[in-house]
Each structure stands twice: as C-alpha cells, then as structure tokens.
Image 1: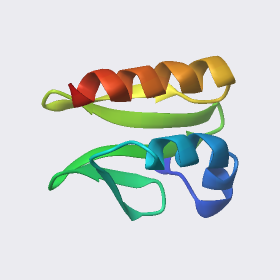
Image 2: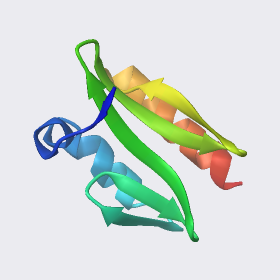
Image 3: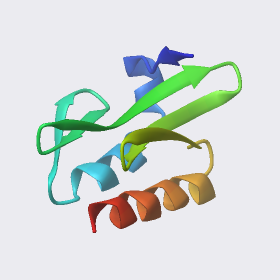
Image 4: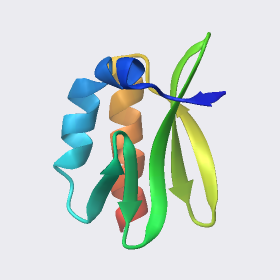
Length: 83
C-alpha cells in the first residue's frame, strides 16, 4: 500500500481541514501529521480505497476514510488519542 498522492489527498480535503483545525497537530508535509516530535497520522491509497494510519500508543492502526461515517470515526479516534 503506497502513501497517498496529492491527487488522492485532494479527495480528502474536507477531512484534512478538520484535522488541521485540531490543536497540537503539525502537518509537516501534505497529509503527514506529527504530534510533538512523533509521527502521528498519515494516509495511504490502494485499489480498495483510502486509509489513514493513526498512532495509537506505540503502534499505527489503519482506518478506512472513504465515507463520511469512516471519516467521523477517524476524527473521534484522533480526539481520543489526544487525551
């Protein structure tokens, strides 16, 4: 599964804007977010769709982000991970 291209990230524009609005996250490159100095969130694409890898504890967990419901679920996980 490859990292998401700019074209793929354009499909996630609304989601990326909501992520950018969250405190404590820094977008070091398009679609790659850090919390403090650690990689926290990035995106992948493959033939089955778009996915986010979110750091939960010491590991990354993969979340589909193809529907609004999936995007809301990811945002909820981001908020949980921040606490």
